[in-house]
Image (cartoon, rainbow, N blue to C red; front, side):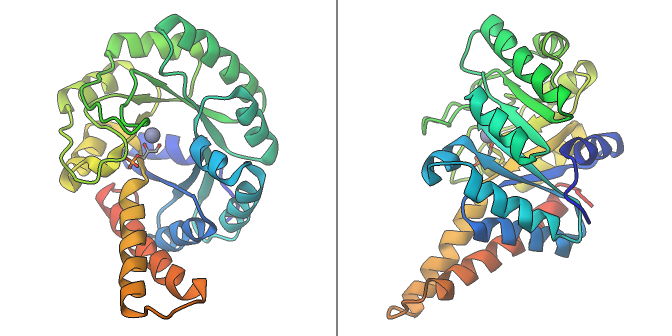
Length: 278
Ligand code: G3H
Ligand code: ZN
């Protein structure tokens, strides 16, 4: 199965009421685990690299090329996406490298400045057939400060999509990034209201903090792309921690990263079921 355009995966899922799991790649093992988990589920998947991961690796290209290579070898449709980019230059680089989509995140700006910056990026990406996600009404927690109170207004969201020409929209409906416990309370009426008036697929960020039954309900209410990162790192780290505790003299990094990778793959298979992704 070739590397698949994000738009193809997301639009098909939106049309058929399914969710799409979008999971973050930080190390190569994440990419391998995400694809293995999706293959086991028989579902498409989106591998996403965030601007923060790019900063950690001091550059996009090495991790991007590895992730694209893993995606090309998959037996299910796999898309590669740039997550939470605030720098238009990074978007340009991702497009050049062959990413199927980018998220341009101008959500900290005022409405007018967000529209102006995003419209420009979206026009450039459209010319290269690259699917663009944007965010309106900042989903909290990106700075480590949880702010699940933010909400996106549906009419403003519809106007924003019209003004910017984006292909998908991340909205604030009760989540916050990097939550370690599943205590977020989703506003389902708000999701339904967005679904009625916003003409593009909707994206849920900060999904690790949402109880799993509510993730299923969120997809049923109209969310399509569901971003999950922290929950997978919890599974990865727990497995590594267990291995190191049981094998304190281990030296070979592969010995403890392999159980982490396997734990993430299992979680991905399970979560794709929760999201009705098959
Ligand atoms: O963009 C990535 C996500 O929104 C992931 O958030 O780490 O809270 O699951 P999370
Ligand atoms: Zn996010």
